[in-house]
Length: 256
Length: 237
Image (cartoon, rainbow over all chains, first blue to last red; front, side):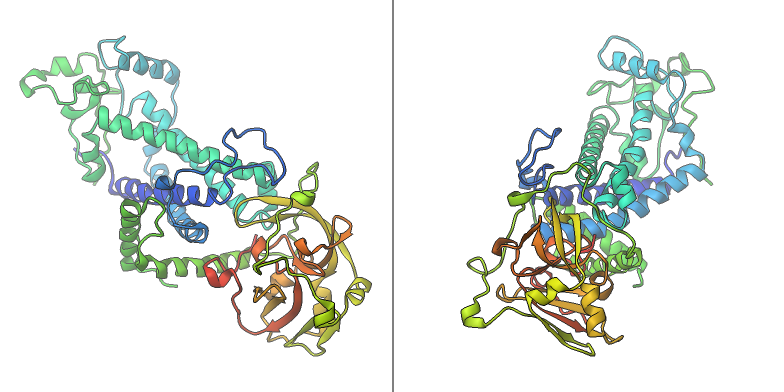
């Protein structure tokens, strides 16, 4: 069974590279003046004013080097993001990603399951409610990062945009904060892939997927039930006992 | 610039390598230099196409002038001060591809059309500072000198060692690009580029030559102090 179309797989991994270079080179740029206050002034909302980001997470070597990487990679990041969003929009994949009624309850159910307060994995479609929330938030936060980035790249020529974000200082702050939000989401994503669904790497690389390996069928929590249940154990009743047809893991995309 | 599949794959490969090998503040693989230079050329085209003389900067409402907290720098060993005894009275030369070269004293400059503007100063490092600058818009000097239509670039030279920066003509002629001689209502002090300097919110701080001596209209970009050291030549905002 196929789970992710090649466009989704390609844009996912290109995004890993582009976003990685954008974040690390951006942190190197930030280190040239690691704060938001004007010289001699103060800024309300940043507790680490003047403290540089550790060099180990920066890229570019020096301010100008990092700027060259940042202003080159931004085109790849945006083009890649638009390709992904265009595909997801045109092929209907967005239906698996948008919030649904009852999502708050379903997120709570996932949290309870992960905390061993429930025995059985909540029923889900292609993604669980927490995943949907994260995958839905990512493009919106990224859009804020891109807009605030444009606002500090061209604060005079795009003055209305910069003003809408509260001026240059605040636009720079939103650029930084939205980047942090992306880092937190990506870190959570990587943690969940490693601890709950390493099998998803296969579907994000080759596209291949089988139900037997899904977290729902494995009843997987972080570092629990990483291996699929033995084939003989996976009697249909055990697998689909709590599933109804409309959301059974038949959600995987099929492609010509 | 044509971007082939080969370029794309090579860019992706290089970026991946950059990411894996290149953290820890490296500059990335040497082979990427050409691609980065291509991207800079593309960016320059995009930035020039966005550029409008009607897009104006204004300091944020309520922001206090930075005053003496306004950082200042120079590249000489000591603050450059014009030595009248050794070098004669300071004059600003306007020349190159012009009909009428000009040689202006500070008094001459102050008699010309004056513009006073409260704007941001955008440093490449990421900070901004607010000041009220007064001076002559460079487009006024260009009109007085009569610029050859073949001139596309302007080089701003200084007496701070070999400091200079050349600009695209349209940024030079932006109404907010000044030969500034006063800051916050007082004549410039040596720290801020006395007797006169370029100040414009449409270019990053390093493009704004202080300790100005000569404005030279030329045909081709002539680099600049920081542009020759790896910073973007365009440096526009």
